[in-house]
Length: 284
Image (cartoon, rainbow, N blue to C red; front, side, top):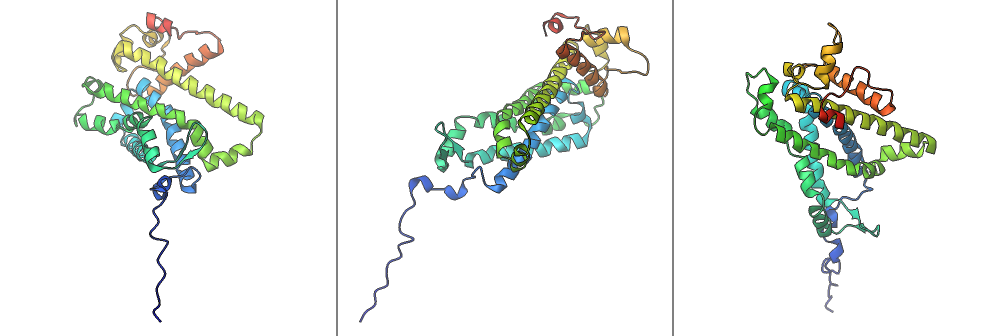
């Protein structure tokens, strides 16, 4: 009697179209993805404070002078680029709160929404600024007069567009979610308020300093020559050995003075000896 081997039924049936490529999909509750989101939340928080400071207060001086500052920004910029590519594989929820895990739909939705902004945000501006500087240059004014450097600073601002993911990242982060569930409502509201005030104060202080830079075109000695709020304060209140906001290397003093004005403005205490003197400053 001849024995007929039964057909292999497991390898002939094609997968359902919605499951094609599902092995490459990154699901939001995967522990590895949640750890990545926690790390990316730290990177995003760093950029929330560092980019406004770098552009508005230091003028990129530390990026130009410090190898450590440069190295940290290169590493975090790489994280941004990796996350930009990962979004092509991350499942998302549609307008009906249904989880979409079809790889083609994920890629198309990402490509037609936020891919362009994320790609610009991951542009390696720090590397290019470092590359175009002269090896023997000692004056930062020489660097910032070169074409393209200002454009790189503007491109860095695109990283802040990723703040729209801040809330979703906080929800996805296992560490943040566990800690958040242990807090009371009153404490959560207080933390949100304090963080919001600190962030807003920081941004306003950086913009206030940047306004003086736009008018003087430098943070060097020329900052004290052109008419602006810093030169006005310097001429009326500077004391030898005290705080000195003029000079590329004096960014901490400049930030302290800017933050002092910001806190006075937000709390309605008054301006004291830090006052707006030009039309743009009064407008702000």
